[in-house]
Amino acid sequence: MNTKLVKMVGLVLLTVLAGLTPVLGGCGGGEGEKTAEITIGFLADFTGPSALTSAELHKGWTDYMKMVEADNPIPGAKTKLVTYDTRLDYSRVVPGYIWLKAQGAKLIWDYSPIFHAMLKDKHLTDKIPSYTFVGDPQTLNVDWMYSFSVTYPMEAEAIIEWILQDWDSRQQGRAIKVGYIGFSGYQSAVQMSEVFNSVHSQNPQRFTYKEVASPIGSTAFAIEIMQLKDCDIIIVNVLGPSMASFLRESRERGYTGRYLGSSMGFMGFWDLVRNAVPDMTKMDGALAMHSQMLWTDQSAFMAQLTQSLQRFRSADEAAQLRKGTSWPTGYITGMILADVVRRAVAAVGAENVDSAAFNNALKGIDMTVDGWGESWKFRDGSNILYRMFRAIQYKALDDEWHDLSGWFLAPAFR
Image 1: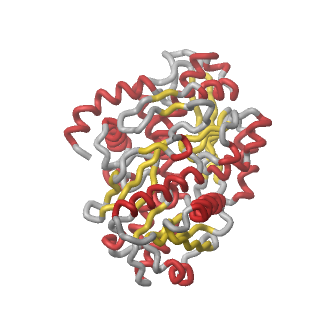
Image 2 (image 1 turned 180 degrees about the vertical axis):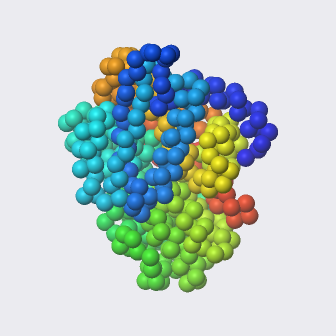
Image 3 (image 1 turned 30 degrees about the horizontal axis):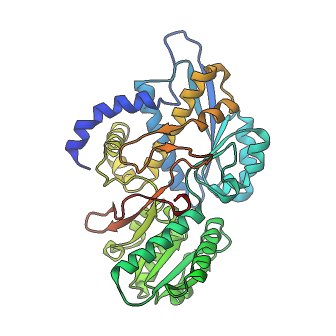
């Protein structure tokens, strides 16, 4: 990150962002003022295969809260984040929801769109709003259900569109060979598979298509690699240690083509690749479809994030958290839900904030943040806050991800 940029905008942004998006954990008002406690639930995975991601999300949230608590707390309100560990075991999702509800959660932050979809009926019956990162077709434009980014099928549309356009620009004189690997039975893998197969059936002359499914938690991929070895590009939608193992083993078994990871598959777990692959030059040029910011972006927003990371974390921990995008995603969630809390408090008073007040405040989100392709806002009845993607690329030279395509609107919204 450009240090001059950090120095120039850091103090200004600290004041501006704190004013726009106050902390949830702040103690409001002056000495002796009555403080109402507002509870938000976080249904996550702290000991399962994506535990590292959940932990870093939580740290990003916590650091944002510390920043605003110190600089501009919400008058009269103190917000508590209560967590439940699902271990990414779907049998624990409903009990987790029930437990968070019993703790008084007025809004639940669902870690996974799978949780989001599984709990749809409960959220609607109990009228408790849900916020998650990625939408789900079952909850699209449903009241009380909100997501930051688009659904996995919409992401799949963006992925295959970009692959075909990029290949055409290379003028190879033949159809591109596309491969896909996902977890067997996993919701996002199935949804993306349906899109890729549909696009291929409509455009068989533009690309060949091979698809393999691997059991969740697999760490060996000899058969899958043999089937995909002649592909020009492999779309990778397996998660956690399995994803890192697949990348390492496929290179060891002679695959020389390109990879393109799903937003969750690569960006949520890239540090696992660093630990699994001895020579990261073998990953040079890896691609991902992404709807978040990058540490290499030269924007005022990323300067603010860098300053906050340095403010609340040791140098060693900050360096570790800066290797991925989970900490910034938690920070962004803090920004959004803090804005929601502030407006709910302003509308009904801190002591009266309930799930309905949260739901009304969620509908009114409208935040413009430097460096993003559009403002964060629910448009035309949509419950998706940000509708844009960009292709990004890993460069081994600096061990960083970089913007490749610039922001573009998801095909479903054009």
